Image (cartoon, rainbow, N blue to C red; front, top):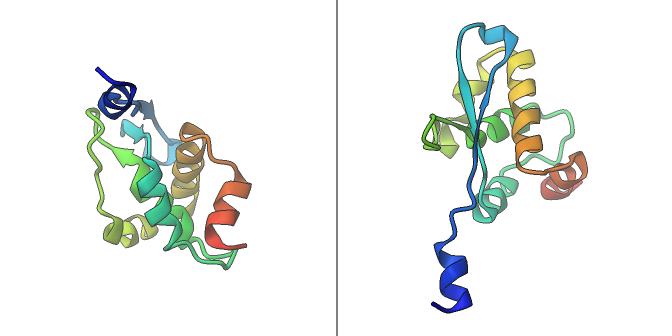
Length: 112
């Protein structure tokens, strides 16, 4: 098998259990985002630092079931935007951490 075939066959995605106190007994799971997903997501980030929709978009992209299957499609982020700011902020921050993203990476993706 060639090196390219080895790389192409790799499954480097990881799923991590997570919870937020605001949602008491709900077990959440976070997934690794692909580079392509991050690129697509960054096109939708607002350049306005105060746009909390960015948090909901990031949470939407990172939430999954135990097997790593996304819970929400990209265009369903508004459903999470209707949830408590505190919970969504914690989820978005956990997605950032799980994917090795810094605040600077997010700002850069948003064009700030």
